[in-house]
Length: 259
Image (spheres, rainbow, N blue to C red):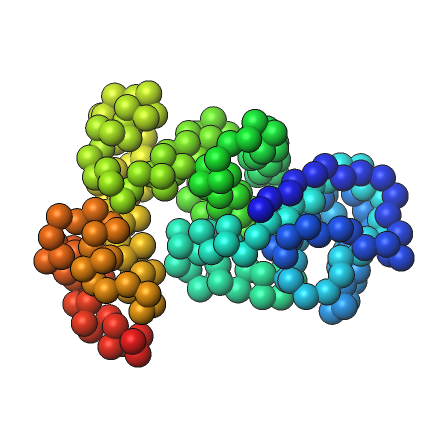
């Protein structure tokens, strides 16, 4: 599902980097040379992150002092998209693109180092998925509001998101998440409002509704089944909450989707 390795040394374009999984990210911490793709050659520089499309071999003609090679499955990318509704998120790997971390590089490397430790510690997949999503959002600039956060705060955000991802279908009260974070409820409320810019209750509700929107976009489940999956005691509660969140009824939403 995920492979992350540190890379260094001299690379020749005759030999491609091995990609275990289709979604590929190359992070150049220190290095010079070229990333060679079918679409052309792209210059390497320190603190540059490449988001590489599925098609085409990845070759380097370079001297790398330090870098990271991250590959993961499409399902983990889907988890990222569920949290990032910005159209730019959907096109992040559509063609080769890159971002320069510059002054924010230390925190990005810290997130990758933490991801490596979590992989080695056999953390569960939902947690690792949140770790990847946080890194992608931060490194691509889609989560630009996190730029002012310290590495410790980013790790706290990761922990909160991982707990939320695991329990949002069954736990609606902030006290549960505060206990999981080892914080008092008011401290957690203040933290997420300051760092993420939303109230704790809004973050919980938004995650439930994003999943509702995802499930309603397919014909795999009836609306009653979706309400049960998402922990609503009655289907009418799903109807009510979805209209408040989306500004349209479920019937209108499905009609607009052509379902």
